[in-house]
Amino acid sequence: MKTVKRIGYILIIVLMSVILFSASVSAGTSKSGINIKKATIYVGKSIRLSVKTSGKITWKSSRPKVASVSTKGKVTAKKTGVSVITAKVGKTKYTCKITVKSKASKKTGTTQTASKTTATASKTTEATSTAKTTSGTDRQTYVIDGNTSGMTSREVSVYHKLTAMTRYYPEGKRFDSTNWYRWNGGVFSGGFGCSAFAFLMSDAAFGSAPARRHTDFGKIRAGDIIRMEYNSHSVIVMKVVGDTIVIAEGNYGGTIHWGRLITRSDVRRTGTYVMTRYAD
Image (cartoon, rainbow, N blue to C red; front, side, top):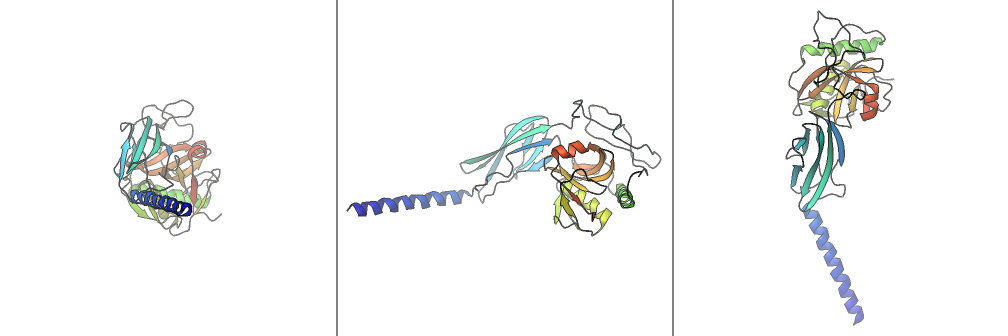
């Protein structure tokens, strides 16, 4: 009789386990939870959050004026501060802490911009790491010229091919997260937004040459694509002047921006990897 009761208890336990497991599957949740639990992004930038589930996800931001979130999990940084994004699947909640920062200088705490110049054929002033700075704006421009000192012949060719693209993709042209481009590099099939622009410019400079990925931030050259800002933004390198890197980017506040200056230390601090199409 005791044996029968024991078997009955075991059957009840097994049945309850099956019911609980079925409930978990019906909710569609994943043990891995949300794809990003904590991130730092800059004003105007966005990242995509996701939860592996077949169930309905309800997204909510604790401070939408700091960081808003769409119904599809796209988080957009609005102003400096901290916001917690919550993804609710059934009765289960997943959170991601978003810290929003402005593009401030690490030393001065003010936003750096190069002297207010526009890329025109008649001007030939070269921007360097000593460019004048002005607080209060988030965009930098530098004058595109023919100064290619210190660059290899291949880098010079890449630089001129990139600057030639300003005719077709001028400063301020709309280029946001809806833009898609299929890449010839091979590391990724393609990308949206900032990645789409970087891939497009990369193909314009290198054609069908294969790309490879590395993390040697000391070796960055014209035409390289840097994935930075804590894996939330892709930029393409126009040229390198000492420890200053001149970049071009798409989806910069929803538009194309040429000539922002970043430092190698910026890349080391927030960079994830570099994609290059140079063979060596």
